[in-house]
Length: 432
Image 1 (cartoon, rainbow, N blue to C red):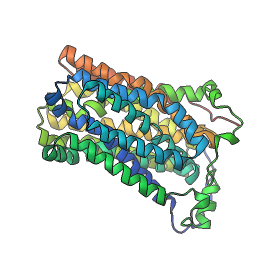
Image 2: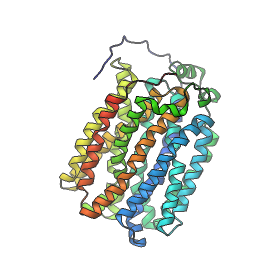
Image 3: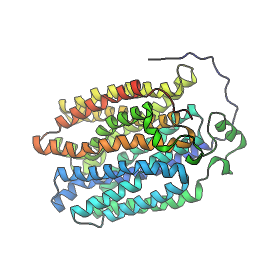
């Protein structure tokens, strides 16, 4: 691993209240709502299959249509965020995807389910690129990994909270109530975000000292794409961008399998009851939460101690975790017993989550300030466009073989390839 020894830097000024971390909490909550609205399908799947006669392949297909629309909308959403601003685009997106979630509970045919899942993907697309952009101007570079790890852990808090909460709702009110309730929560949050959120230069709650601290390492002001000297289309000419695209594809391939099939895997293979699933299906996502936050903490510590640069810290963490995830995921179908299976699933999500958090933070290091959302969205496009195939491929494997083994082993091997992409292809930031 490449390292750089630096002289010890002076400690930053005492900046008093750290209001920037309050912004992270808002991003965390928004991300949790985002993932509740996509994870509710995996919770509702057994009852939907029973009532509507859907197959495992058809459930996987719904996940694939969501991922395709989500991936394709990454490209315009990143440009829209950089062009029109984070607050405006994020608020519209919140209301859009919450409405699509409510509609999901009202439809009855497979074609209608496909349509609303496509609408959900369109609405959810701007969420994480917006968060990456907000982080880039609310935090100095050395803190972006930790801040990103916190809000990106929302993608694990959502599935962790979903099983006990949504199973209770489903058992009490029926599976359609899952979609109605989570949709309404999203609309309420959108109203709160509009009232609360302001950019750093306009925030009255941000002290002058904290604002100067944020500005000292490249943050402070949201920059629009119109001020950039680089054309949006030329981003695809950069080697580092392609490394991020390919690396995120490898990561999201196995991520989508976990997101769509983890509760069903426990239900089918380990015969976990619907009520027990509310506990057991949430346990592995706790490992994801830890991986997200601790991974961001590690990269910050490596930079604070002068071991390496922010970019190299993230690339190293991603590479180590990708290899570890590959080993653990491949071992899942080879063990017997619920306890050891849950342990391996928890470890796998810990490593995978550390990758996703650092990958999103890496967008702020690789992209120029005016194009952070665009580069983050392009990376996410690569991940979800390719990863969109994994739920339907996994569903076809399960239906054809009667086993999840090949789906996990192939997914683990693909996840391991992320190490090659992020370490050997992603190298240098884009210079304006």
